[in-house]
Image (cartoon, rainbow, N blue to C red):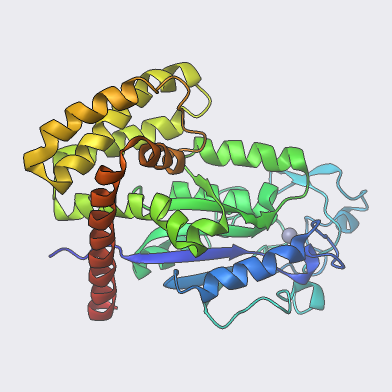
Length: 350
Ligand SMILES: [Zn+2]
């Protein structure tokens, strides 16, 4: 059996004193994400926890003081547009240390960045010229990561660029999600733009509840995991591929309501049929006919607001209770089986 990527990882971006209230480049409420992140790492959901750390030499080229400029002016560094930041996160200073309440006990890897005085590095994966890689992408791939959640400070800079690079630089099948409530940004407009950019790139935007709460967990995360399982096991390759394509297309059509509107009923039809057939092939046709009327009449105002989560949520609302009970127990069985397989493979292969 081919070794498949099995591990779930969390990348915590730059939760350092410098970016928290009282630091040199404070992000409003930056410290409020610490308990959320701690809860997530303590939950056991993640097999691997990674942190990035902004780690500048004194006199770094991104500092306004280095050029005698005003802070927050736009300048240039290493051939790239560069915001002139206040001096921050200078190596071996308190400003560069992680927030004292951040639970580091689960952290397996620390990726420092911004060490080259002549180029800044918002992303934990490479510098702003997209030239020198840090090696984090290779390290995560070698660990067998198939899901990478990204959170931290600041949403509109280092978190955004890290998430985008994860999506662009890691293998295509790796799922990347941005955890909104475990992150804070510098400006509201910057955060809005960052979310749009991430969505466009296929990065899902979630809350920590998806990681922490079992119900929400099932609604979103396991849905994706189950597709991966289905694809891996070849349980029903045809349906898996069809659905996978729809998921990607719907994700990309977030801002194109007209086309999404046309695609949505087809997607829902296939999703439903996939689950029913997976559940009880002998009853598929009967169930399918019964459910078709049900959701054909209620389609108009049922559009996904945030990709797969609401797609799944909508499906939950549409199926009748009996069907849902059957689906639920099947999903539960499937998830448990998948989790057992996953842990066994990690134990066997490391
Ligand atoms: Zn910096």
